[in-house]
Structures are given as C-alpha cells and as structure tokens.
Image 1 (cartoon, rainbow, N blue to C red):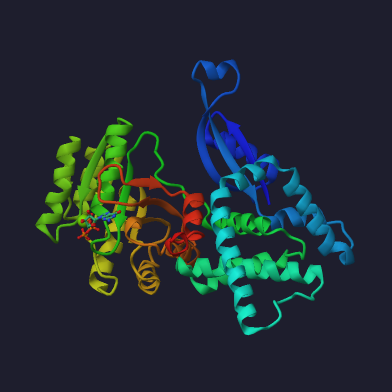
Image 2 (image 1 turned 90 degrees about the vertical axis):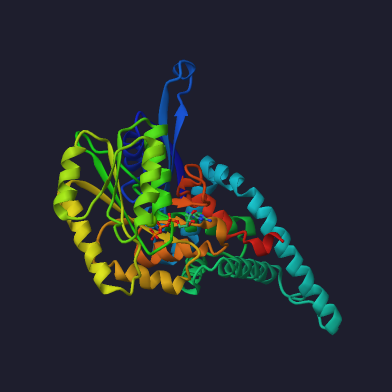
Length: 407
Ligand SMILES: Nc1nc2c(ncn2[C@@H]2O[C@H](COP(=O)(O)OP(=O)(O)OP(=O)(O)O)[C@@H](O)[C@H]2O)c(=O)[nH]1
Ligand SMILES: [Mg+2]
C-alpha cells in the first residue's frame, strides 16, 4: 500500500493532486486543514491536506505488469516491501497505531505464555520446539492473525467480513513477515474498506436540503439538532428546520424547541405542496434540515409514505438523504432495516449511540453489506457536542481493541 499526503488550496485541489500522482484508484483516508509551510503560514494562510492511499493490489499490479510469471510472488512482495519501506507516511501511520500494537502484543504474549504453561502441565513438548525457525515464525504469525480475527469477532465484525480481511492478508503473507507489519496491514485494509463519505455538501445559489430517515428512537431528531447547531451557530449559516413527523405532537415540539434555541425558522410539513412551498420560501437559505417520522421497517404503508416523501423532496431541490441507524441494533435487524430502504438509492449512513455499545464491528458490517459510506457518528445525548464526522482510523482502533481486551 502507498500512503501519501497531498496539499492544495481546496480539498478538491489536494484530491486532484493525489489522483494525478497515484491514479484514479486512490482512496482518501483523511482530510484536514493545515497551516502553510514557510512565511505564508505565519500570516495564517491555510491549505487543505489529504492523506491518500493506494490499495496493495493496485501497487502490485503496477509493479508486476512486466514480470515473468515464475518470479511474480517473490518479486511482488519485494516491490511491495520496498514501497512500504520507502514510504515515510506509512511509517507515520504505523506510529499512530503504536498504542494499539502495545495492547495487542501484550495480549498476544499473554496467550503465548498460556500455551507454554498448558504444555508444561501436560508434560507435552512445547509446540514447534523442534521445528525449523521459519516454521516457528509462520506459526507465530498465524497465531497473531487469529488473535486479530478473534478481536474482530469480539467487536462483532461479521465472520464473513473478518474472514475476508484475514484472507486478503494471507494472499500476500510471507514467512518472515514481522507481526507489527501484519497489524499495520490489517489496520490499513480495514480503513480502506470503510472508504470515505461525502458528508453534507453545500450547494451554490440554492439551499442544500438534508433529509433524515430511519427507525423509531434511533436519534434522528437529536442528530438534526446537533448538525443544525453546527451550521447555524458554528458556521453562521442560514438554517431552516422542517419536520414531516406529524405522527406525534411531542415529536413536532421536540424539533420546535431546538429551532427556538437556534433561532431558526421551523415548519411542519403535511403535503407535497408544502414541501415545495418551504423550499421556495427558504430559497436564500444555506441548509434546510428535514426530520421524518421514525417507523418500523416491517410497516409497508409507512415505508411507502417515506419513499413518496423522499421523491417529493428530491424533486423540489438539491437533496441529500441520510439513513440514521443505532449502533446498538443487532446486525441481523440492521440488515433487515437497510433492506427495506433498497428502493431509496443514494443515501449515506449515520450511526448513533456509539457510547452505548462495544459492537463497533456493526459499522464495518453495514458499510460492507450496503456499500454505503458512513458520514457521521454520535456518541451521546448532548446537543450539540456528541457528534463527529466519521473517522475510520478511530473506529478501526476501537474494533481492534475491544473493551474485553482492555480489561
Ligand atoms: N446514548 C445516546 N443516546 C442518544 C444518542 N442520540 C440520541 N439519543 C437519545 O435517544 C433518544 C431518542 O432520540 P430522538 O432524537 O428522539 O430519536 P428519533 O429517532 O428522532 O425518534 P422518533 O422520532 O421517535 O423516531 C433520546 O433520549 C436521545 O437523547 C446518542 O448518540 N447516544
Ligand atoms: Mg424524532
């Protein structure tokens, strides 16, 4: 894998530079605003920096195109190792996972000691004692990969995906590969699997309409309040709040209270005409956030209603749709929920209540099951603070260091 940083005046410029250098298969792993180097930086000029990665397969493909078939496996590995060794940014990334490594290594050493103790009690030979060095190494790697695999399962990564990650790794495995390389490789692969969501993007000369849908009680209204507060207070944008949740009076009041606090206009929407009217009336606003009624994925009538509403809103203006899911929901139920939205194309995911679970693997499961990126996560009831843009690095660290391991 190649990991490199690129800078530009805007995020688009930096992404463009990454694509120019690494090709269109590049995946953007991180975006941040940085001070410019040199004198420009002193005067506060900022620029955007993106961290871009190119999957191993792509690197490998580029490097082996002209190699003789017999030499491929070894040479591919050598080429890849060289790329990794030369890549300073890759080393920086590895530094970041130092703490994770320490945690996993101590767990690994502990389980190795347990194996030795058990064999001593049995009076059996310690495993692999007579084996050649290479075999011992291979075995240590296998045990480490199994530890990573079990850790993923503890975080409730679905077996199918945990196997995929481990199998991906096995394809490039080599007997003398150090286990910190294995960890860094698995970590990077998982980050790439998460990809990167578009998030909420502004529209020029018309409002960005953002519609939130999802099951009951997952935190849709609370999440809207957090996001609306970010734009209205943090970014001083013109924000309007709408709700189509007319099923419960309390639901209307909940959003009205937030609208009052944020001093933004608020409207209850009953019909398609009212959607169009609202979009016309708030035409000079930056963002229109729209709440909807939570519903069971088993209620066909409500789902039909939701699909019609989305179509109306999409026809009325520049709409982005977010499906809000709770991380505390079982994976099986999450699969059923997203299946019920299969006719709604082109949405992004928000996961709430990360503070109430250690089943972070569900986020990876859902991303892979739906091929839909995660844009935001929320981790508490506090408005506006308990929300952040989805950060794959952070969640992968959590997946690979379950609470069970930290105890
Ligand atoms: N622990 C935790 N609680 C949350 C989070 N987000 C929302 N909640 C709580 O979940 C409950 C439901 O939140 P709402 O925002 O009303 O959920 P909703 O999806 O709008 O619910 P309906 O409109 O009834 O479908 C409230 O008690 C929120 O405070 C979160 O990230 N963590
Ligand atoms: Mg609600």
